[in-house]
Length: 434
Image (cartoon, rainbow, N blue to C red; front, side, top):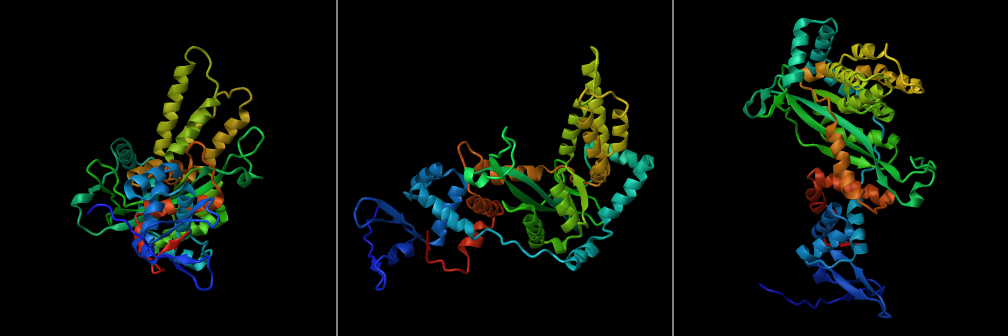
């Protein structure tokens, strides 16, 4: 159709000459520029529909503001300055920031516990774990085969029968580069004890389907099938994050689940949340975090002589193999008689204590045989997808307030409910003035 030139009519408020509107631009979702009275500085006032605001925010949530500026101009014909992008994105993000819900009472938690108590996965776990501990030959063969070839499952594409729903709940923390004023008083890893980042806490849930007898549904590649991941995040403190994560699980169907699995690393705050809000869940420490602790533990052991390197590698391989089987005590029995490097006694004791205190979360062999995830790669990826890819680029420094809104915005986008939630909101869709 070609270019058209529009000369919109400006309406000035009869009560305040500084308030004005461009009804046509409001209707079309366009941008208007205004020049101040002394004609010295051009400012930009945003008057756009929620659809246009959503488009601006989505581009800015995916790309740094300078890059987003170029994209919006080339693709959308929107010639915006960076402050305008910031203001629109901040305004849109505000609508996705979750309030801290009330802490769920014991009755609500018990209601879920009663529903999932004695589920087929939990029953199978206790039965198999007991047999495995007593060296039941059949159980040992099942576990060894599962570790080697993957769990016995049913092809998801061909399965049409009934199933049970299992929700996986994960959380982790990641640093956000902050402004200097935002970091005052925060302890960090710098030589002077100061911090360059403040912590964002990210949560994720997804649902896996199993047959009524507890077999996982798998893909053609033999991987356990899972539903889409739903993310949430905040820069609030852990006492706020706990009830927010619980509410996130509820919003995504926690009360409809037949079983719940909680995955995390070894951080105390993670397991504090699990004990407080998800005491009914089967629990597992991420296998790959545990392997990292094995590697650290081996580093504190003394290996002398020319064969030291080979003996170290052999021990490392044996320990990881036992860990994957969930044989924590057998692994520690290998380490116990070995000499410690001078000056590393406390470190080795700490490494050993990590496994003795967390062994109840390390039944990896049984979990693998049952088709239960033992890796928290989903939450590791979530920290990168939600925070790292957008908020940790060179030279970036975030205020906690804007970081919180950006995290909420990126979670909504990744959850595929951004446009439906924002553009179809019951709130006024005439315009957004930022």
